[in-house]
Length: 140
Ligand code: UDP
Ligand code: MG
Image (cartoon, rainbow, N blue to C red; front, top):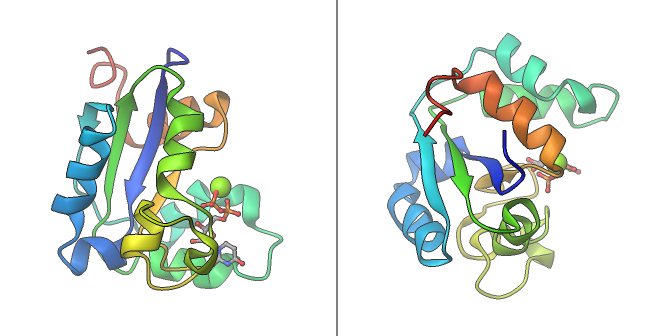
């Protein structure tokens, strides 16, 4: 995947609260182009695989239960400096610390149910995109 791309998921709380529209609008208004998008519900096992890097952390089981509790909306986005600019757009992991106007500050409920995911490196963005989308879907 080119380095001007990143991967995101709108998380279960934000999807079920009806915030996917305003979140996608904020993403597009910030200059990101949607390359791929779907709505899907993960099994607890799939969520566990996605978050395997966190498996030793105390919040892992709860995170996997939460991430498989309802539909999510994974997306691949394109913009110059995508990964870093997207992390800035979503704000800090804990919405209590997220900057004013960021997606997490606006829409997140808690440090766990924090509305949206953003990849933390170009390498992980490519791995995470391939978890949800085929090569053909990423070809655009
Ligand atoms: N998380 C949590 N408790 C914590 C830290 C993280 O429940 O103390 C959840 C939260 O949903 C977060 C995800 O685990 O988005 C992955 O954590 P990470 O540290 O990678 O934060 P992110 O990169 O999403 O900001
Ligand atoms: Mg992370």
